[in-house]
Image 1 (cartoon, rainbow, N blue to C red):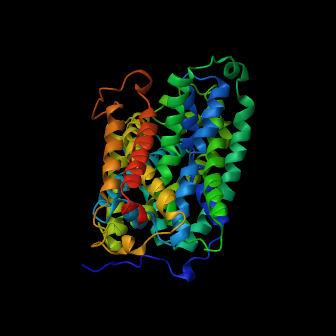
Image 2 (image 1 turned 45 degrees about the vertical axis):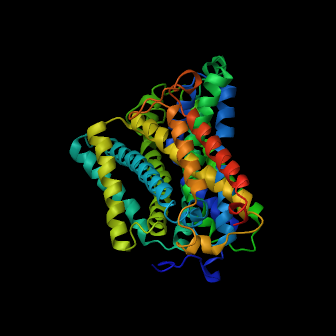
Image 3 (image 1 turned 90 degrees about the horizontal axis):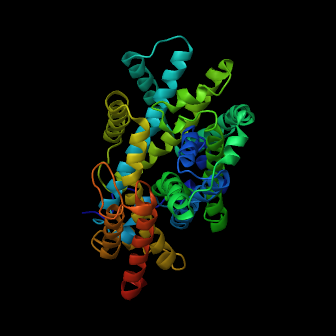
Length: 455
């Protein structure tokens, strides 16, 4: 077997990006209207207004995990799941790579569903009736819209994300300035405080799982294009603020919007429900804004899933990757929209499992980087020679143990953990537990193995 089929490290000619490109890239991808639904879900944890805002701010800054992990790409000039070989080994890396693909597929499906529902709502506003036919057409239109991004070069992707940030960010602000004055502040400030352990912490875990932790598998895919002369702090803060700022804005307004649209968090079509809070003559602008806010995240999901497929040597040919991605963004959303017909339940069920898979992986990746690579860099043979680094058992064991512990403390549609009671009942707190267990175990195993700690 050859050491590498792909060019593992980008040449200097492709490493010219400035930190601001990362800010715009993540900012555009997090302006999506789905953030309003997250805000409404936060209220469902029975928190006071102040507690809900604290959850929003602290939870959104979980994007700091993505910022830290992005530094590995800046240091080396290679993508996330090539770097992941150091902490898992070539064969061991296959497990988290598949988990990341499932994550990308899940997020793409959720966003495609949201986009299709938005196009459908636009149809209804223009006088068409809701039917399976119009739903199918709406899905086909949105899928075609995002699949265009497979033709983008990296520079084109950055350019599109920057345009989306300015254009749809501005339109989003216009919509928000209309919504905010209608807030029932008396209702918000009258909400009693929830229990800090039983309500606040699970809400925080939900936001972290759905935002920062959910984005960790993308981290180095875009920072690897950064000019090596850019400082680590510039890169890390550009990523962190690029994700956190729009999330804080969108989630906060979702909290305010919950006073006008109390059914937002439970709606099968949250896009249609949100429109009810707007003047009728702004509906078309609102829907265009919502569609524009959803497409950038799909662009990144498609590109990163392609990079994972290649890094793990699962699919190499670009044509077959396109076929695979087309199936993902059509079949799964079609099932959710036409069969399951439970948008919100699908979202929360998906987060419950994927959040733990990614939390365990990202924790191992980050501890490995901070312990072993921060000062000494990556040993390139760990990333390019499968015979030297077949399996890093420390990483694989830590990943599996953390995930299993998380599942034991969770209740999902496929498994009910025996310890999913008390503060762990029916929420994403087990995701944070998974994060801590995997990272701590990897730290202990690495410290105890002097040979591994020198690699």
